Length: 258
Image (tube, rainbow, N blue to C red; front, side, top):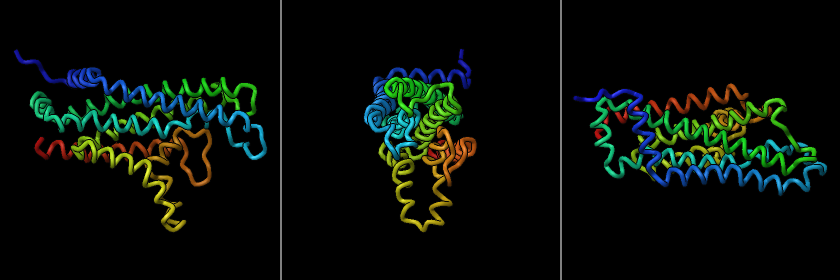
């Protein structure tokens, strides 16, 4: 008696694959360590000078999320590995033989890991915020969860890291190479923003806010600075980037041989 292939069963299969690999938990642990550790370090480093003239922009919130960029690398790399490893080992043939329609595999990988990355990112952001708040207690930089925008911002940090995880999965399927996927991810989120300074100011000002990294940063920013997107607009832009990479991955998965 054959067992029908359903989205739920495919998702459970992908979750089981993820849970079975020790490297998955180690890399997630590193992401949390980066997020919490760098936030606490920033708080200890900034505590002594936070009340000094010229430091008015420093807050416990900004220090707490100082490690988001570092956590992004770990979560994005794990997303790439989640999908590209099957091409490296050849296991993808067995996966697609079990799910001949193919696309449910991509949707399951992206959704399962996206949820895991979101929850891990949110948990790390909350712990980092509480830890830095304790370090900065009694200073002008202290911020509480009840302050305007803090809860929304922490959720935004989780959403940003969750979408980075989905982009990583999609890059792994699109490029079918761990090295290629990681290079594309790191280049897009870390290198390209720095290269914007080489462009004329008018071009840089017009393009920079719509880069994935800048749009993502605006999602969890407490306030919008000049030239940056609002939290809602940043989320829409990052969702558009995510959808574009997923579309490319879906096309290659459907059209190309495993």
